[in-house]
Image (cartoon, rainbow, N blue to C red; front, side, top):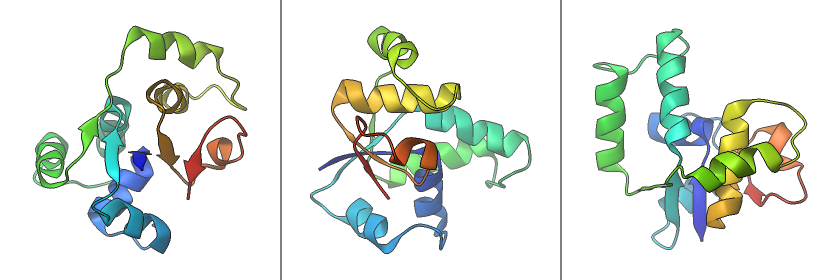
Length: 129
């Protein structure tokens, strides 16, 4: 299974947050699961840290670098086709991060791990919670 972790799922998994479902904990930890991450999630993580919503030590950039070294995860390339697709897909809101993440899932034929109700209810987007 090829699973793109949205920002919250990625952070919750690495920080041991109890909000992460047992199902996703198991899937993320399974050897048969190919994990993917969008650069948009790194961007969102930096914003969360800058705004004081999360505290990452010693600093956000160093934490992200270490997290990417310690978890076998593929970076989903952000190519122009994803940028175009992000404007063509139907979403109930205009959040640019969600648009890029959803377009990435479609373009790379992945399944999105998310609890975002704006994304989980879309019939055209494969999601797991």
